Length: 204
Figure 1 (spheres, rainbow, N blue to C red):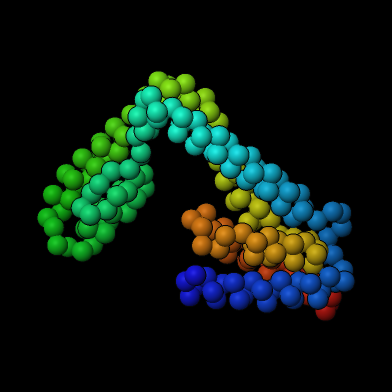
Figure 2: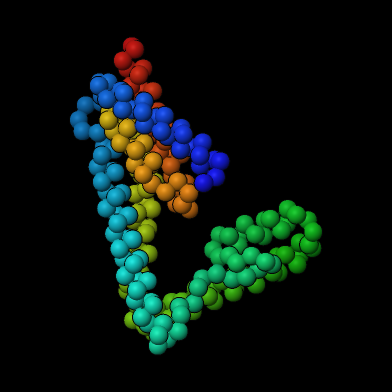
């Protein structure tokens, strides 16, 4: 685990403990805390896309026996294997380094994008050829739905101390080193803002 993840985990543990102590704090708003519904929905949508993804992986493995492996949506560019927005990032890095003629970089950038698009098209063609087009699209839809829910969850401010503690614990239980962990700090800020609001309400 990296140093940043260690420090983040330490902060989360401290906040989780603080949230547990403050469970008797009066709610800042009336009605059910919306964070619990958000957490339940996020857990379900995450399980949905992971289940579909497992099905797709098994189906692709079986289809590969006859059709070969599905083309991967990645290309090789100057010692890096990348795809999608990483191509733009690599271009910016090369330009910033200033070691290569910018015109050369831009030409290679156009070529990289063309090769990436060709890889994506080859993957789509493979899906159609193997009869996995619908399952592949369902996986993409499920992942997108979970992503939208993740953003909504991270921006939802709990209205009770119990809700804030539940949100913090949910973050602690997640993989803090995963690529999808970008939402953790946003959600943590929502929990902190909620606890601060409740403390201000009690003190007023």
